[in-house]
Image 1 (cartoon, rainbow, N blue to C red):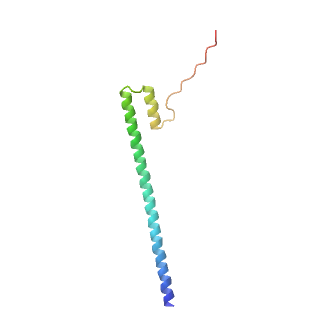
Image 2: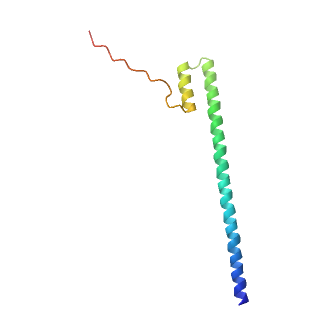
Image 3: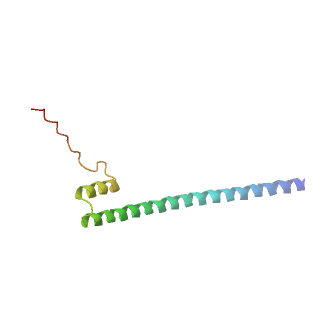
Length: 95
């Protein structure tokens, strides 16, 4: 009977440490996913900031118009409407 009890105790201990290992791996995966998501968010913010700076320099140097600058800036910032819509005037009837 002691041999069977020793074998059962060995399996229980194996299952316990196996569960601890699985839990540690899952926690590590969650931490890595969170860090990666945070790191990617930081990169995106820096990219849009550097693009915005380059566009602003182009505007200041006269390479793009004010309208183009405002439209691009609004897209980078995420505004819903980039530029005010111009109303079309109806064509005048022929005389």
